[in-house]
Each structure stands twice: as C-alpha cells, then as structure tokens.
Image 1 (spheres, rainbow, N blue to C red):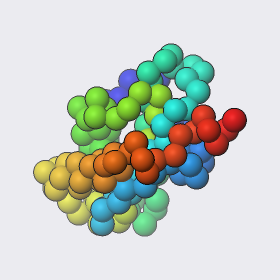
Image 2: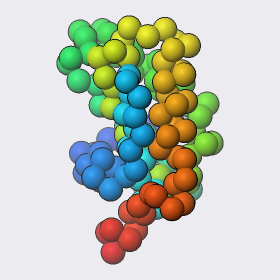
Image 3: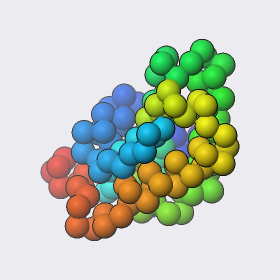
Length: 130
C-alpha cells in the first residue's frame, strides 16, 4: 500500500502530470511522469502517484482489485523514479485479465519506457509553470 502523502488526490495534479509529463505505454498500462513539481505538502524529494481506472476495465470490484495490485507493485518501484515527480497510471481493460506476474511485467516495461532517456526527452514542470 502506498502511504497517504504519496498519492495524487487533486484533479489539477492529474491534469498536470498528463499534460506536461512524459508518456510510456504498454497494451495494459499508460504512465505519465512529470518531474520537478513544487513539493508543497509532501516535502522535498516526494513522489506522488495517482491511478485512472475507467469503467471499461470492469465492475467496481475488478477496478479496485486492479488498483490495489498496482499500488502494491508500485510501492517497491518508487525508488526508480526521480524525486519531485508526479506519476499517473492509466489502466487499459486488458490489465484486468493479466496475472500478477503479467501486470508486474507490464508495469516494469512502462516504467522503463517513461524513464528511458528522461534527461533529454522529458519536460520539467518547473519550466512550464514558470
């Protein structure tokens, strides 16, 4: 489980990550990573994560199961992300049919794609908001 301060809760934070962040996708997941956000509430070096699980994924029970599995998997992978980042995980309907191993592999691949060559290709929020 991700700690409370590590979760995105405001719509504006989700919008910022999706609009400004670098995108990495697989068939089951799309990740939006925006670095350099002003760490207002969580302290410096914070990583904040939010999930978008649409109704197309399944019933409320299925959507919550997928979200819980992803939170559990992400908890161990947060150290791969740069500090002061916003991460939005958008779930595709195919994610509900994946095993835990398959979901972990999809998450690892999407994380690799979103963080690959981040220094040259990513956009920094502080430059956009300034």
